[in-house]
Length: 233
Image 1 (tube, rainbow, N blue to C red):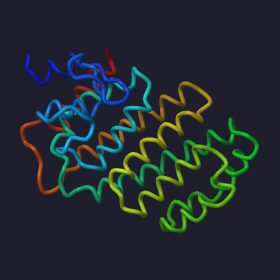
Image 2: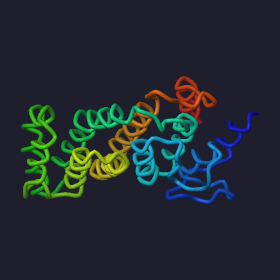
Image 3: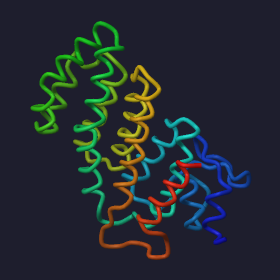
């Protein structure tokens, strides 16, 4: 068995940075281990967008879903490249097309009266809002009604970080939004659907490559195979 495969089998993913000696790591400290960097969750070999998103997603996921992140660690190595603009756009599209509607629909049925009212207004205009400029959308979300829930506040934070063009903070804001979108789901099935959506988003931004990549690590095809194997076990 290759050293990399053995490490992926031995490690248990946990919230926060974890402990290298105990083989209990977060996904980004696992990336650091694979890249031969010092222990920590901010390896320099990784894209800031991917790094911020993966850290937040790792910490939000339940234990069983968190283990599904392990196969992405080798792919994240070498994402410190020129593709972060595309990664930001991909994450924003996923938020506007999938994450935000999923959270708003959940608030309609399970939120407080104020949250449900706000969600209904936003959902009614969402097709137009999703196509609006970031500043226009930010203006709507920053209104008094849009601060009615942690989910809506987190959505406002995502758009704010996108406008500021802070790569790592934007990635982290999207990961935290996934956590809030899962929290408002009324059923376990709905929560798991959100988590799998978030894992797919990590797959997509990690697979993007710019002008430089580390050819010593595995391809996206290998990653999908490992994820399928992990999900089936």
